[in-house]
Image 1: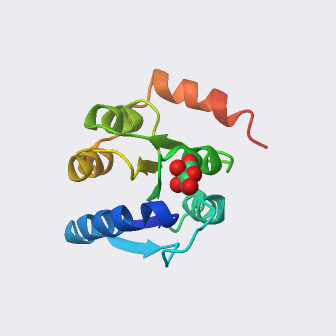
Image 2: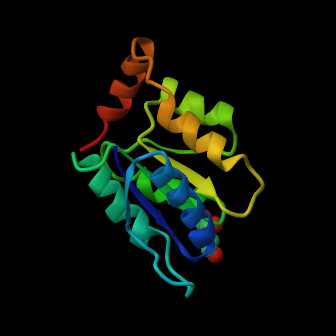
Length: 143
Ligand code: RB5
C-alpha cells in the first residue's frame, strides 16, 4: 500500500527506521520531510501529509516528532484525519479497531516496540458498527 511518512528534526532517525520497516514489508513509502537535521516546525510536515492522506493517494500515514503530540494535534486539524499517538501495541490495535485511525503518530524520545506498533497498526482492521456511529459524530462537525 502507499504510505506517507514525515517527521520533524527530532523524529529523523526513527523515521528512517520506520521507513525501512515499511519498505521491508513491501509498502511504497513517500517521505514528506523533514530531510535534514536542522530545526523544523512539525506543522509544516504534519498538515501537508495529513491533507495527502485525507485524499485518495495514500492508504495511511506515519508522523514522528519528539513526543508525537505536536504531530497528532496538527494532523487532527485536517478534515477526514484520525491521527493516533501510539506508544504500545495495545494502543495501535485499538486505534485501528475502534477509531479507524489513518495516521500513526510516534514519539521518537521514548522506548517503544517500534516494529510491533507499526505492524499492529497496519494489520488491524476497523471493527465498524458502534464505532462507526461514533466516528460519524466527529465527521459531522467537520466543515
Ligand atoms: C521539537 O522541539 C519538539 O517540540 C517536537 O519534536 C515535538 O515533541 C512536539 O510535539
